Image 1 (cartoon, helix red, strand yellow):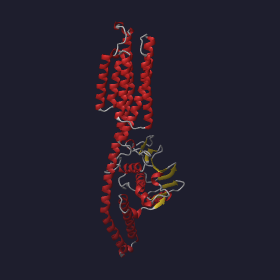
Image 2: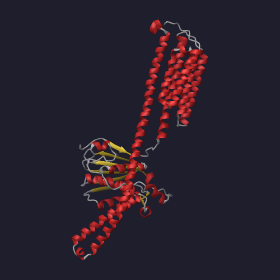
Image 3: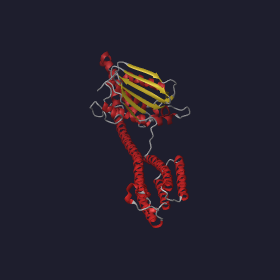
Image 4: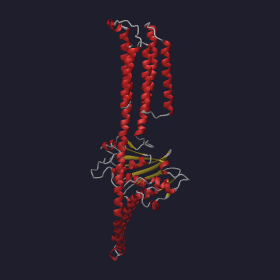
Length: 465
């Protein structure tokens, strides 16, 4: 393991959006409609230039007034589409289908006025078909194919041919061959540019869908673990209570009370039994049982101070630096999920660095930032690369890697994030950022409602990464 690395892993972005599949489709549809609008502006400019070059440059007379009227209508439709896109971001398959039909109708009108099927630019129909194949659903694609084929046939039947000489033998000097070359280059360039952009939009959607599926799988995993933990907590309650009674009886026996060393060991066992009972109570509390008995209103500074004091008295840490720089104190509910999350990070750091730890709490804008620093070996590159995934551990034991996995998911549920990195001088830094809106009580907020909102996400206090 190298002593230092510049790599930083972050999971659970602050206020991360939780859009569903429909929202993703809407976003991609919005982007695809933007591409069509841009393509339509290119078409307007390109048609104006082509019409002027053919009419004045080649001396081929075209009905300029009618063709410019068609272009004006196309430009107006594009402006309306752009305005609608800014007001309503949701774009359906039907809207994309109608937009392509308008493009086909406009192209057909221009071709009808400029030679029909004999116009070299008739092959621009292929551009509409290919765009439809990329953007639309199956029925819409085949409708575009049928419509363009009927338009081509109609042009061949009813339009007047262009007065172009049949001089194909002149090669590139032939106006018709030149028109076909320009049409081919235009088709190829537009397809490369816009199909590339549309494909990128689709890849982004697929990547986000994969991320959503992964997140759903992880959250389902947490639910199963929570059910198992809750069941185990119920089962452990009785034996822990029995052990507490037995230790209390032992303390009163003459054999133990007369031996200070044995009495100290009994006291230590009682402390550990009490700690186990607190852990079990925390699991049940976070599962929604006996919540009202333990939730209490406190402040952010007091909550952190009590958390650190309790953790320090029950762990064998040699040197622990704690600095609470939160500043203005704010009311909050003492929440077991946040407590277990921070304790999990501290336990992991203690296992890696039993000689020295540091915890710093700061108030950054509208967020609480908790930074835990250790002097251990740091995270190996594989852990950083897969940060936030379950069972990513270098310890090689069953259940390893669940600690940070659960920490990340609790932070993400509260709208926060967790970042880890290695220090250049050795050791690791874990930074937890939680939005104050998710943990702080408003002055007029009901205590029980706040407790319910905050304490629905437990972190079982087992399994370190």
